[in-house]
Image (cartoon, rainbow, N blue to C red):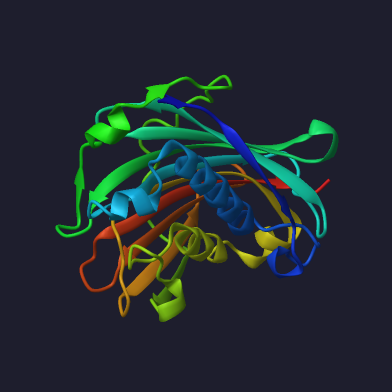
Length: 249
């Protein structure tokens, strides 16, 4: 079977916008997930297909670039395709289009397979590696390398993991992690600047009842912030991220 791309269309809802009336990044990432889910169903490698084998997909890294955020009521088209495959990783790309094929944003992501019983990462199973990857679009550059370490946080918040933070895999959904990371950004940045790029690495899972410590600090570059989420109970790093912000036009 050849792995081909597909698209899904969505209309930005009122519950998904910020005070400017435009879609939030977590909302757009949720749309990317929905589009990816639809694509994996057609390929026979959806999360439900994996769960039948006590396996599941987990997101390891996501890098998103936004050029313009769609507004409330605007219809968008999210295109996605499997761009490459390695022994352990599956790469998936996304492009978000507005009216007249305006490119609003794009993203590259890395996915792993986890054993649901052992809660351990495993190599891609045979029924996935049997797919012939034939990208319908030019692959986007992979997100590679380490992110700068956050040394001295300027903000620290504690977040209790609650019932509605948990997804089908019974751990905190990655869009909630993204939201928690973004929420620690200084208020003046959130109000006066536009998030134009995020690179986020998901290192470990967090489950119901855990306490997550969210921290942030400005990087050496202007308009760039470093984020870290860690477990209060174990001290383990859960998420590392870098965000880039530009002045509002």
